[in-house]
Image 1 (tube, rainbow, N blue to C red):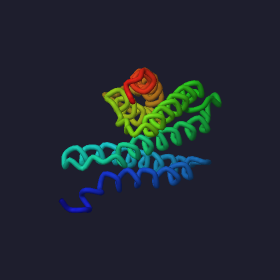
Image 2 (image 1 turned 180 degrees about the horizontal axis):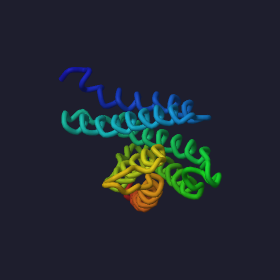
Image 3 (image 1 turned 135 degrees about the vertical axis):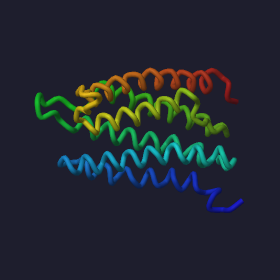
Image 4 (image 1 turned 90 degrees about the vertical axis):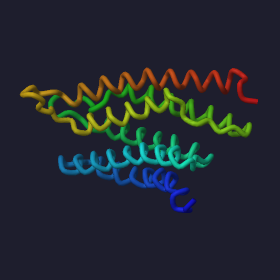
Length: 194
């Protein structure tokens, strides 16, 4: 098998990491145009998350490096976006674009799961993302995209708030985040890993 194809999933994962500082820079004190560019970068980074896993599975080039790097890159991307969204304030009432309590729960979950993965790795086990974790990531990335759009969309003549859609999907992602964290906890702390 071609070496480039074998390494492509990890290259895509690493490219996602390189897009994070660009996204953060654009969101520090953004104009409307900068938010639009940042949204495009976030969407591009999110798409690499789909393709790195798809390519790895389709061509059977799943690696331990990929199992570790892929969820880590997702966490860094999502955490950076959520922190930058808390920093953005509504022009109307000064509230953050995403509630702080949601970000605290998500960040705490990510730190907990990263710690569990570290424990598993110290025992020679690599924990790949499970179904709950994959749903959590997909929902978070979609929610963040909606929150970044931040303006109502006109659908069939009705203004639909992307902020309300984003917040509700983020709440759903928290359910999957806590569910998958529970699964990891049972595996690592429940003695299933020797």
